[in-house]
Amino acid sequence: MIRPFLIASILAASLIAGCTQQVKAPTDVGVCYAIETKDGAPVFNVVARDQAQIETCAARLEEVRLRFRSLGSTRQEITGAYQGQFIFVDRRGVSFGRTLEGSRFFALARTGDGRLAVPGAIERDVTELGVVVEEAAAPTFPGQ
Image (cartoon, rainbow, N blue to C red; front, side, top):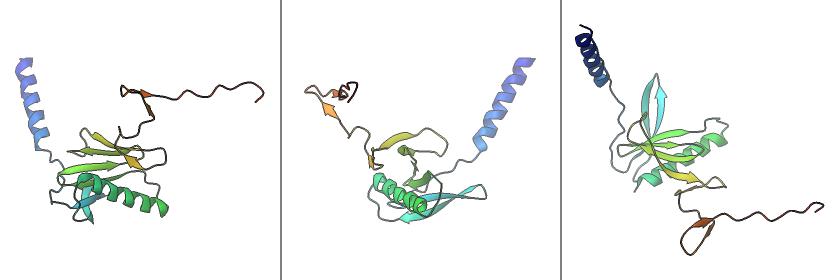
C-alpha cells in the first residue's frame, strides 16, 4: 500500500519540478548582456555588440563592475550572458555556466594585481620537465 503511494508522489514531484521554467540566456550572436534583477525576474541589458568571443564579453562585464565600484558601489560580482551562456564575474575571476543556478566552469583567474588571466598562464619557475617549482624564501638570521 505504501509503495504505490510513494511511487505516485515521486512522479508528481518530478512533474512539478519539470514544469518550473528555467531562465535561458539570449542567443543573439556577438551581443554581450549584463543581467539585472527587477521584481524577481532577470532583465538583460546590452553592454556591447559585435563581441568576437565570450572572453571579450567577460572583459566588458569586468569594465562595468569596475565602473560601478569607482562610483561607490559595494557590489563585488556581476552576472552577464553571451550567446546562450551565462558569465559570472567576481573577486576570484570569471566563470561560465549554461544555467544561473547550475555548475560553473572556472575560466579566468585574477592575477596578484587584479587583472584577469587564463588560470594556467602564470608560471613562477618551471624546470626542464615542465614542473612548477616554488622559490624558497631567503634564510633569515636573528639580529638582521
